[in-house]
Amino acid sequence: MDQQKVKFSIVVSGAPYGSQSASTAYQFCASALLAGHEISGVFFYQEGVLNASQLVSPATDEINLPDFWAALAVQYNFPLEVCVSASLRRGIVDPQEAQQLSLEQFNLKTPFVLSGLGQLAELSAACDRLVQF
Amino acid sequence: MIEKKVGIINRCLPHGSAQGRESLDLTLAMSAFNESLSLFFIGDGVYQLVDGHSPEETLQKHYQPLFKMLEMYDVENIYVCEASLQQRSLNSKMLLIDVTLLNTTALQQQLALQDQLLSF
Image 1 (cartoon, helix red, strand yellow):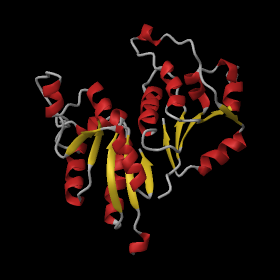
Image 2 (image 1 turned 90 degrees about the vertical axis):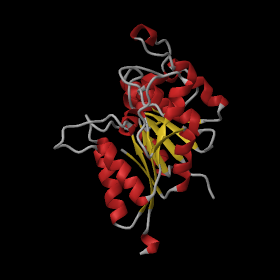
Image 3 (image 1 turned 90 degrees about the horizontal axis):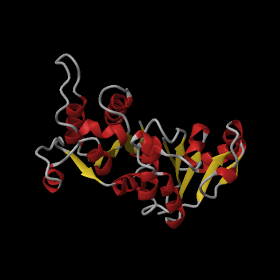
């Protein structure tokens, strides 16, 4: 079993709503983990950074993808890295950036973290397979 | 550990979406960590390398000059689909930077050599 274990790094480029990219990425991660594989980390880029908003509030009979990501990452202990430059352009802000930029609010959801594209390079180097959604 | 060969595929027009710009941002940032990057320009993606755009008129940043940074960042494997250029009545002299033109077969071979691909 151990020999077949694959380490995946994931790139999410789509928003939590409006395209299927992020939902499919989530399902891929959940299935891979259930099958005994490992997720080294998920990197959110482009519209994907919107998955990290704590303000996403769909109707109660719909799924809240940011909640799903957060729960999966905590359960299996892998990082949710969010590209900082893509985030700031799209209004995803953590407390430090809010303070630095003199913004009144922040909205980055726990346990997502803002990080640089260097983190993607690290995830790319650390995995057996890099999968982009 | 041998460095992974990462291919970055560009297939979108330079305008209408931020795909091209965010792909170039990613390339320049990753080049600091990985010296085995290759860029591919296929289909409408070839328009990204054509000079003479004025995106400020549509409130966008003019990111084309940043392509010249690739050389400084030692990103030298820049492959352009020759057929895509021909289909659009373009040629390599019209491009901002020096590139390697590949026919379809050579393009497939070069893509197959990559360990990882990111597509924009």
